[in-house]
Image (cartoon, rainbow, N blue to C red; front, side):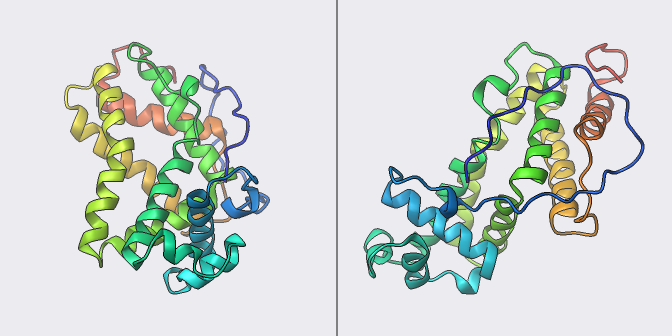
Length: 234
């Protein structure tokens, strides 16, 4: 699943509407559906594995099923990932690659961009996940749950997650946080809770607008960084 051509994030916050916009998003394309002929075999296997996790859950993820979904000769997935652990690691690796494309590098805040730019980027990422990349959220939840039952996958999953966690800690420090690790944890927990509620929970039929998400992120950052910093607009 490749991210759409990014829409520029608004640096100014629009006033919140106070309502949640009913969402009827089109079913997002799955990774295998958007794979190009030039995709590597590892990418095709990873895309097919994520598709199966979304559609059938963990029980539906088998080497044979991945071969069929990816359109590969029987035995191809086993040759690439001989064990179930190796297949799960392939799926996690592809999950990280796809999630890293939700925002383009030029949409990420720079070292001295300030809290306002951080709020813009986080709101844009949340909105794209909830409108264009819901399938990625479902596959991530499947892998996270499986990691709670497989210590060897837990280690791999956590190491992969550091690719997102560590930069956020650095961004919080750049934004002026006096406790960047603690504040990054709070921001991740808030974001993950919101995404789960809107993708799989009781708010699954509604998606907050981009201005509403930006307001929510700004309120959280303002509480962390202080109201007198002047770095966040209402």
